[in-house]
Length: 227
Image 1 (cartoon, rainbow, N blue to C red):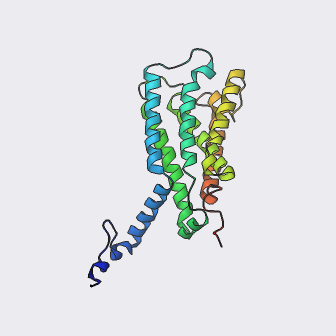
Image 2 (spheres, rainbow, N blue to C red):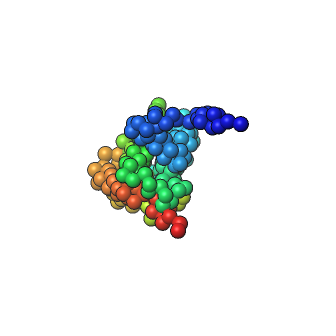
Image 3 (cartoon, helix red, strand yellow):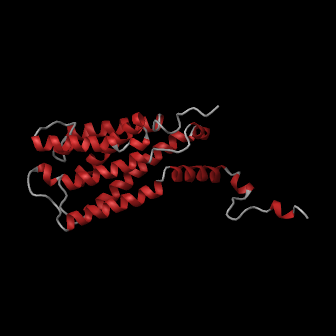
């Protein structure tokens, strides 16, 4: 009996000399982070929400009534997109994930920004050719602001509960729209070119990005490793 076969690498393994290269190691780390956050599945969900928005606008699933009724379906889909992005901040490894060192905040930042851009692209493509209340400018404002609420709630409550921020904001928005109130902090109720609403949405998104980058979700990367 010999040990010659023990030295062979398992199928699909990265060669040692190749894995030692900084570029390859960085790409592998990024891929493992994306998989641990279920980001490939999130991209599929965002594409599905874009298709749902296209179907809603193409087949006119709108509800007759005031502004709240007209924006119900688009806002619901935008809320779902923001919730998907927020939930991806949940990681299964807790404290041991901090072993990635200085790369972890950059991975969080890149994932959040890339997913937000992907969500906007998917929804904008779905809205192409349809009559979207407020147009793509309002879509960008609403989506980024709602995503900020999701990232903030993930930092406070945990990534698994990141969806509560967009959902709570959606409920507040529908109530304000039905009541006819106007405040820049409920930006979907404002015209698409309203500067105050855009600033409020941008501030919430920036706060969410900062919290997600520096702190991460409450249940990911901040728990102490077991003794």
